[in-house]
Length: 128
Image (tube, rainbow, N blue to C red; front, side):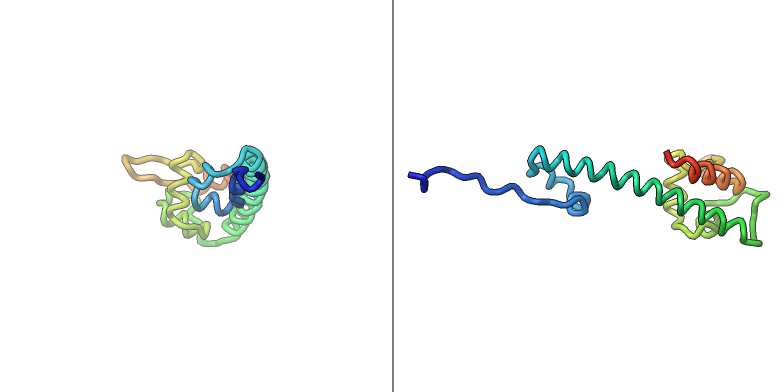
C-alpha cells in the first residue's frame, strides 16, 4: 500500500545567481529556501556596499593624481565617465538615481568634478 502514497517531487534548489538571472523561478521555492536567499542577499548587499566604498576611494585617489583635471568647469557624462574609468551609462544612471550630484540644463546633465569627488569621498567614508 505504500506504493500508492503520493509523494511530492523535491523542490528545486536554486542559488542566488540563478535567481537573479530568472526571478520567476522563485515561485517554486519553499519558504525556508526563500528565507535563506533573503539572508544571502543581505550579506551580499553589505559586502557590495563595502566594495563600492573601496572602489570609489580608489577612483577619487586616481583622479586626484591626474594632471588633466577639469575641476573648474562642468563636465558632461562622457567626460566624467572617462575620467573615472566607468561606463557613461553608469554615470547617467547614478545621477538619475540621485547618487551623483549634477546640474540639469534642460535634458542635459552636467557635473562639477569637485562636487562629485566630495560626494564620492563622503560615500566612501560612510557607505551606509
